[in-house]
Length: 563
Ligand code: ADP
Ligand code: MG
Image 1 (cartoon, rainbow, N blue to C red):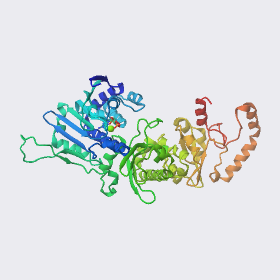
Image 2: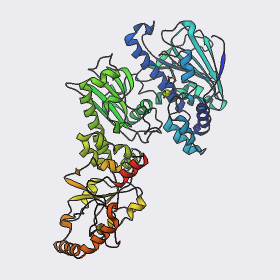
Image 3: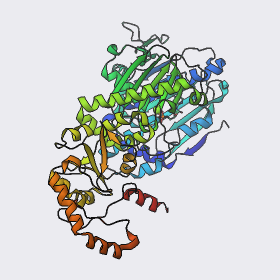
Image 4: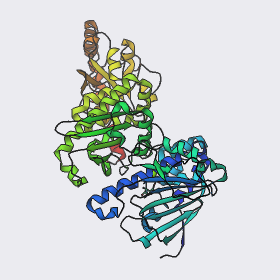
């Protein structure tokens, strides 16, 4: 197997490489963030595997990342002594993209560099970003625990293919050598390199070392390289909130979330008492491309006493908050905790409900203090939040307060109206929240059901999202005000109808009894009932769903599924 093999990249990798090289150059230094992030993950994984197999640590129990450059050769080297990779793992990790939905995602790319850069950012650039600055990349790696003869050398120019061969490697872990493009030699400059590394390393919990800068030494005398640590090398979430700068929080987010943009908001908390844990939760600024894919990764990074245990621990937040990223570090769980154990542990349930509250509080705060940011949040994650009341009954009032709707108050379909704002605008004598559901905004906006409300100046929420009817079937009231679907049953406007209006309505109903009977005879079984209505001011007739009948949207959904 030692012989050299040449393999082709998966098609999606080729596309990604091509796009990245052509659209990311305005942000090229992020390749260092990605490679440092990977080296840090590799150290986390080693420490985790070493819980069960301490021998993996070999003679080097401490993990470290070392970054150095060679100006003459125009190379930059990033070396870690983390978990490393086997030959098969190298082929899998550095030759393909494992995320599901990747091919579909690639089809969305437009060729417009600016748009594509932001899409790729949302997808996650990762290891392949090395090719933004390098025209050749070599990877030397050996998996912890494997024999010295089982090292692997990978090499590629970032075009269609890569080579792979088995080599000897004395130390476990991964060394990545970037052969910089001639235009990118700045990254081989010790001074420039130091600045970039510092920017991307303070939140990393293991030491990052650079060659020590020596002064007044005889350069012709090759001395043993000395290293110095340039970051704090402590887990960010263990530090006191007041000592952490915003940009440190932001860089840490990009590392844990594999995101490219800053988060919208975060919440960092230490909980003491019966259960002790620290959480650092982030609201991303943008939805990931796979938000609606069932098997898409979700959940928090779990640490136990600062030791990384797993990615994507789903047990700490409900499904409708699956977009939240971050870390939870528990002092009480065992280092041997598994997904199965998490599922059964009642302590996890109480952490889950506390963390859920934290997220809802953070969103409430965002909505109050930064309404514009909240509007961005809602655009990206609103439809997911709408799953909340059905999934999380106990928090439905809190969730309802975070919902945003289109309404007759607005001239377009943007979802900007909160229930609190609606209630504030209620008419004298109004004690209900009125809404109308439908498939399209233009159709709902012109519905005859709205006539009487327009006339009386009463606001109606216009719900045209696919999930809205499902949502409303789980919300009965908010702030003590009942929700009323104005397309259903007898419309009782309560105190909003003056006494004389009511009498006039009853008289009209009596006078039209004959007509109603004739219409009933003609329509027979096509309708449940025919009534004289005061809903309408201009239109002659309207179809109404009975109080307990299935809504029109739900009917369509069921029809579409063949029921
Ligand atoms: P991500 O970090 O989001 O998984 P990357 O493209 O950055 O994606 O890396 C792809 C994979 O390659 C990683 O998931 C990891 O398995 C492997 N990998 C990358 N760098 C290293 C490294 N320094 N040590 C061990 N494995 C690595
Ligand atoms: Mg990565």
